[in-house]
Amino acid sequence: MTDTPPETNPKVAQSSSLNPQDVYELIENDKGEIMLIIYATGQEPQNPSFALNEKDRRIELTRGKDDILHIEGLQAETVEKFKTVEKLYICEMKYNPDNNTENEIMYAYTALLKKKEQNEAQTPKQSNPKPEEAKKNLSEKVRQAREEALKRKAQAQPQTQSVPPQNQNK
Image (cartoon, rainbow, N blue to C red; front, side):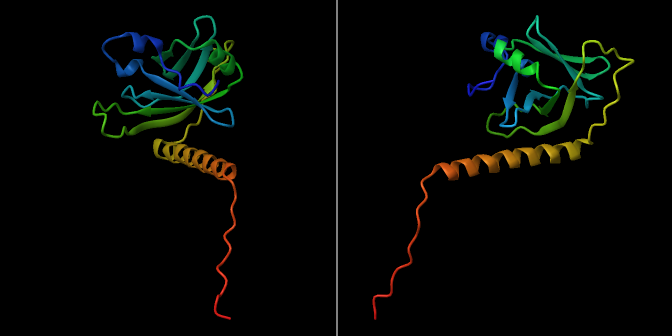
């Protein structure tokens, strides 16, 4: 994935009315970890997992037994990247129609790649942290990413030394 703007569902850009359930963002950090940001669907995820559908260029995010979201319209470059990903970080935000109000994190969790040959009987139960613990872990990752960016910015700036003023009264 390149430094282009976060990927979003192309269907949304073409529609005249914005449905929050059709909006997503994919963000990749320096470590190659990918985070999916979506609006919450209302119920807490249970044993989440994801699968890549290369042919249809989409991610199938399983949030629970009968709760599957399709993240469609992936670019070819993103599909290639997802071929190497085994863990996806997900942040579900509470939809707030007021643009001046910050959106609230409803759920933060990880989903592991569901292998094509696995069926539901073979899928191991995943231990995901409780929502408050997951939010804390996610916040820590965000804090670390911010610190790394600030360090890189500081290193890129020219270094100057301050020389203390000399005492003129000798």
